[in-house]
Image (tube, rainbow, N blue to C red; front, side, top):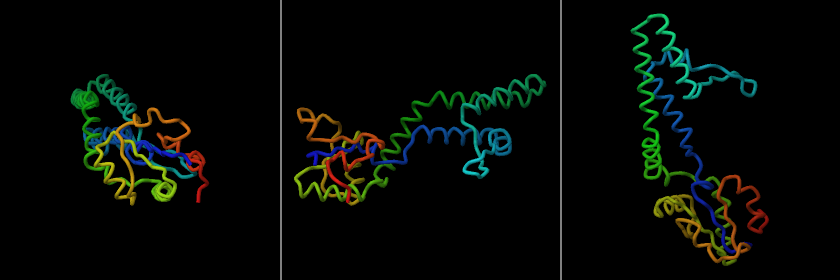
Amino acid sequence: MRKVIVFKVENVLVGGFDERRNDELNAKRVVRELVGDEFFESEFVGKEKKNGKVVRKVVGFGEMMKKLEEWERRFKEEGNIERLYWMRGVRKKLEVWEGNKNERMDVMRRRYSEESFGKRVIGIREDLKLLERICERTGGKMVFVSGEKRNNVEKLLWANGLREYEVESDLGFLEGMEEKDYVVFDSVESLDGMWGKIGLRRG
């Protein structure tokens, strides 16, 4: 068994925070608020077949912006000044909203870190508990690496029933250690075959 097992907390253990998806959902909510439910449903919602069933499908934010530009051109061609100004106002508000993306994403990440991170559930909790017991017997150790505040990570681990652990801010502590002595899991995909990589059979 490898002497040190390293897990990058956010990428491997804590699922459920997809900032791009969250931002896309927020964008769609803003569009709905600006154009109203009726327009939103008629212009941005369609249907598609999924697993043999017909399901509701909302187009992406980029496609919404293109459709709004098309409507603006159409209203201009029709000479419908009131609707033209309405649509132009909607599009300009969305451009401002999109222009604030970096600031918005920073706020979202900070809120996630401060309010939600410590409440997440670790997906492979039972495996980690078993590994923790094996490490206690063999003298190995599990180390969690995270850019989050140490106490946030400790709370998360404690809430998931993991008692003995070390938390590091980066992988610098591995410097000088031979590669055969440690294994690092830095993405969900890298967990495939976890037990074999550690040098143990599962169960």
